[in-house]
Image 1 (cartoon, rainbow, N blue to C red):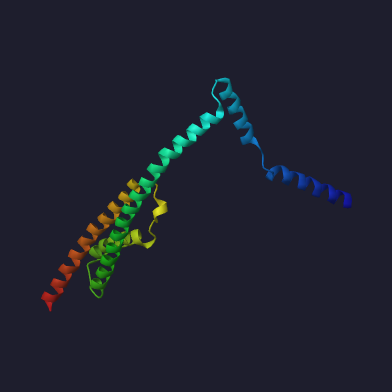
Image 2 (cartoon, helix red, strand yellow):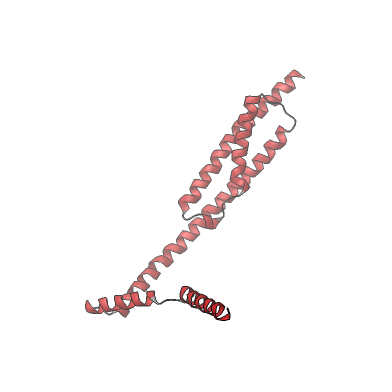
Length: 166
């Protein structure tokens, strides 16, 4: 019985070692590419150093520019979200205690909920892969603000009608 348990533990240890032990498949691939480049008459050291220099030089400038542009656009997005949040809060305050027709109330509720979804759990700067993605989000927020304008008009009409009836 002890021999059987020992055998199972030994097999388990060997299996785990083979499964999680780092392999050198990447090293084998690098060796074969070095041999290919030597056959072509180009040393791999100069080729790889040129590639690293070119990619580092090109990516560094464009990455820095991209980060700056994305940060600037994201600041605009934050301002738009802040304005949308203020506008929603103001409309909720204005709507307090007012009565609306069921169809109108349903439309207003849908607009308010869709607008609230944009600010409930906003995407952070790292969630966007490009400036275009941030600009699309800004367009969504601006559309929500324009949709809220319809709700604002409906509230004003309701207030006027209730004031006229009193």
